[in-house]
Length: 215
Image 1 (tube, rainbow, N blue to C red):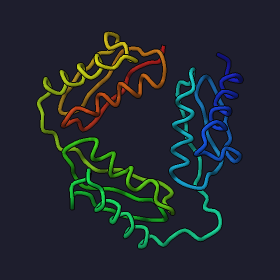
Image 2 (image 1 turned 45 degrees about the horizontal axis):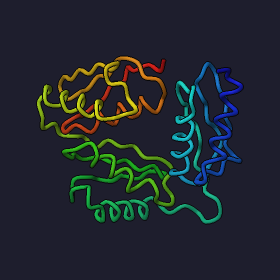
Image 3 (image 1 turned 135 degrees about the vertical axis):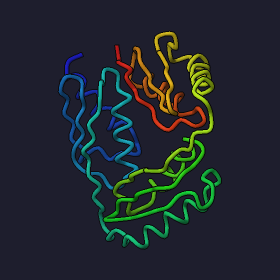
């Protein structure tokens, strides 16, 4: 697939996604790598644009350089944004109470603390990303390991085999010190994401190194 054809497919996908105003997003493609530039009105829209680009067949990677530019009302003060972020975490039934700390500077929210599961770390980020005024999120929450390597590996392999969209036999999984390494080949970018999600779903996983290639 040529870069020109791939670029048009990405543009069409951005236009198709209703949560994105693609008018101010620029798209460039070089050797299958998509570069997104321009500006959007919120952090969640910025994430949606990156996600939409990754779903296009033939995309080998995405470089996201979109800026968040607020239109109309002035963005909230950092202290107000921090207060609202803490409230969102307190209201979450998934994130354990008093496990996550919030720091805000120039609209960028930094999350720290420690949880037991990766999904709790992701839920903390999800609780914040739709807040008005957020320009970016740095998620430094740590996942405390609670399972041995053999148990983690077996759970990941079982999850891969259950997924009909992933050829699990083409993926090798190694686990060391709560870090999972994925190697092998997949057919599309979204299959790579599915494999990563399967790795993160195991309890105690603190890092995933993705060496999968899109064949």
